[in-house]
Length: 170
Length: 170
DNA sequence: CTACTTGCAAAGCATTTGCACACAT
DNA sequence: ATGTGTGCAAATGCTTTGCAAGTAG
Image (tube, rainbow over all chains, first blue to last red; front, side, top):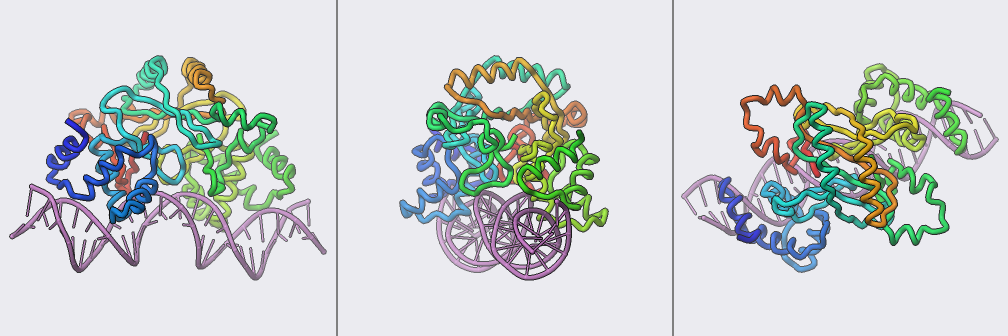
């Protein structure tokens, strides 16, 4: 059972339809890079003359998240990023390079377990979590060599966005 | 040395001024609840007839974050929340109740250590991190008793925001 | 058939910005 | 004085929505 069937089942289950646009979008997503924004996807479709509106892109992405075929991630203030869902499998978290915006994934069983304990200690029923580590990836550390890494520009990303490179928040 | 002095020093260091508005805002923040949005603060000031514009509220919050007197948090898609910075002290993370929006704080040294290891393993220079656990606080779990907790309404917060209660993303 | 979808343009929201005026130092 | 800061309103950027027309089942 592939994603398309899964999507169709999901849609049928709520009396919704598998349209041309929805199918096109699902297929195109299979070839997107790991993390993409609604606009990234819209641009790709537009360049390929698929004639799908931005509204439909947004609506379909939301459906795919509901169908658990995509996960929505929220590291960049101002817009969501999507990634293919690792089908019920292992959860993963992210290392986000604040310089080049590259995103690495990690999974650590010990951390997963410890956070369960934390939740229990607070009488908290954990449903999901996000764990983002912000910093410089290997490549960017090397580029930074010589520059002052502790300067606020890196160490304290500002809240006031610079529109070019988004700030990192806690 | 209190926050006001610290802020003044920070401002002076960059040739900026401590204005009436900035002082009023700083003082008012000391009486805000733990986590507040720019708009929460603006509303309070407006009700108290302080005559401070929204633009100034935003500009001042950004300054306070730069001055490390506030931290900006980003759990809710669409707007930032601020909290008083725990002066250089111990970092903490958050448990966010998706039902009542209450936010609890936690600190776990083991997790902190493990994530350092993860970063190292990926040749990543960690600068900051965020770790948010979403779920139901004890109070809301009890209220939920009898309802179907695994229903998508709770288990799979949708991307499509309901405008009233914001969705949770990963 | 007929309810669900789409495209378009307009609306929303939180936040930022341009500008003329006001104010700390 | 003079460079900063402020209020206002307009601009942004991403995302959602209303509505008339199109389409899947």
